[in-house]
Length: 300
Image (cartoon, rainbow, N blue to C red; front, side, top):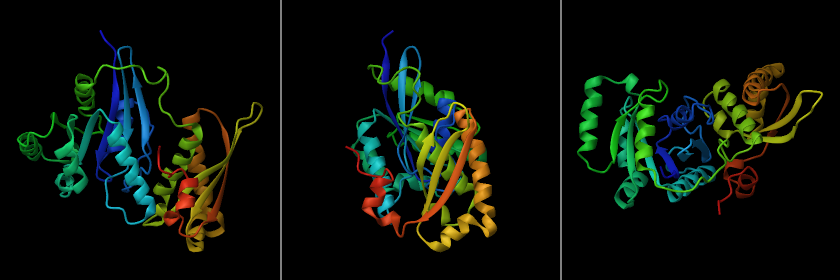
């Protein structure tokens, strides 16, 4: 049997379950998830390797019309994923009235009209939808003749995820092993630690505040005879946001630190000492120089 390999871009509007799908396909939590939209900011690469194949999944930010420079950079990550991909997995949330709007999005319409690469359409969150509605939508989308297959799934319940993988394998081209068999991603531990802290910010704080935050790992020191030392900065845009992150008497940042440390230790499988500081960088989401420093520079 010849070896198969390729890149699979997971696309969709914000909060449709792209990161949950990636975690289910890999059977390991790689992308952070949150009920809030725009949780994923960068292109996350997840590698699934077996004896006869290697799939490189590209989890992308939600498709949206950029309102500021950070969102423009996020849109750039989506474009990069589209260029790299051999197969597209387009997800829509059929539990939401806005779910079908995905196909009316200008980016999606352009992709479907121009691409010659196979597109798999996933109708996600069927666990929250009525069976007759799911069947009706499957028939409707299949009649469009734009998709290689239309699959109802529940990424969070792991329903039909194996079927998605089987469909991808059928479409996967022959190719080399791009990454070592035991490699799960191209990102380092620093990146995932910063993402874990950002995930906890999304969980613990409300409204627009999490979207004004960035997490930067200042120091990550592995120590043989003591806990690993991690120093992280939480970047916000205003002094008022800094005060909210810290909380009265430091109560909120203590809560954030405890929740982050526990998840970091679960991820790293070792104990850590976590130090958190909050810094104000006015309008960082609109500042080209700062965005580049935070890893949102244009990819080559």
